[in-house]
Amino acid sequence: MASTPSADEFEEISTLTDKGQTTVPKAVRRALGLSAGDKIAFRVGRSGVSLRRADAGDPAIESFLSFLARDIERHPENLKVFPPALKKRLAGLVDGVGVDLQASIEDDVEL
Image (cartoon, rainbow, N blue to C red; front, side, top):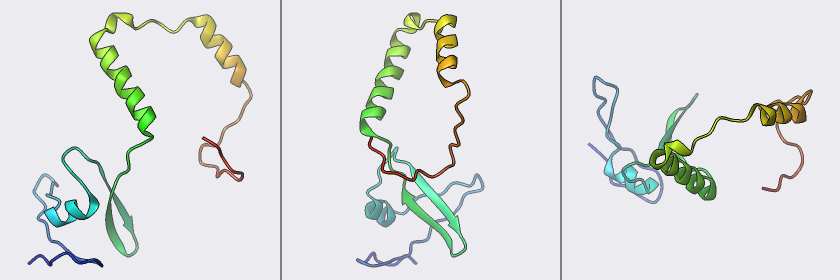
């Protein structure tokens, strides 16, 4: 039996289908502000599993990427091959530059 949501913690029960799918209970969707199409993230740790709303990326970037996707869909004829000379120039700009994408950033970062 599901508990009534409170200001603190609450628990809801959901059934897993044989395809590994489940319904996020209404009280949980409401608590997380979820609606159809939203993304959720599962975090597995020693104390169990938690569920949270997966935050969308930067709205400006999301908007731009959506614009690009629509434009490519509507006008695929506008796609052009990346010029080899530009590719070579770009490669030269980063030649010998090592990047560790997992390294933490020590100083302040301004975006």
